[in-house]
Length: 111
Ligand code: SF4
Image (tube, rainbow, N blue to C red; front, side, top):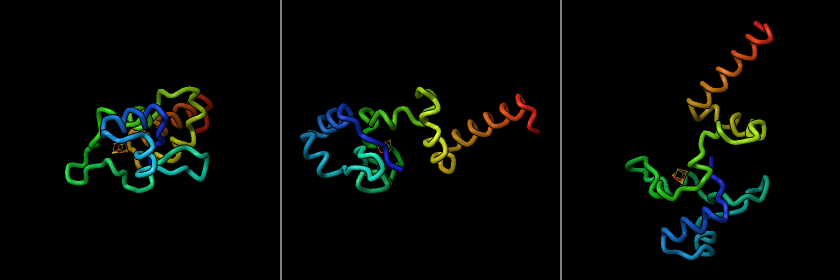
């Protein structure tokens, strides 16, 4: 998984790292083959400190990371594919989707 980087993210993070936005993009990002979003070239994320398992740019991390696991993003249905991707990696997403499924089954008497 990789976060997407908005223009504001790139400006904020490159400033934090004392790089130009162009250098930042060239060094770390590429266009996603799916939709041309700017995403990491490498995985795991270059900003993950592998010793501490913490984000090394936490204060200025991409909005996509700050908003994870995206339960408050709207319109909600636009993020169904994201929840589907995250269900295998994120326990909160697994619990959330399981709970929604139980509520729907109960409301529609599918069980
Ligand atoms: S939270 Fe930090 S380490 Fe994790 S994906 Fe986002 S930028 Fe990378």
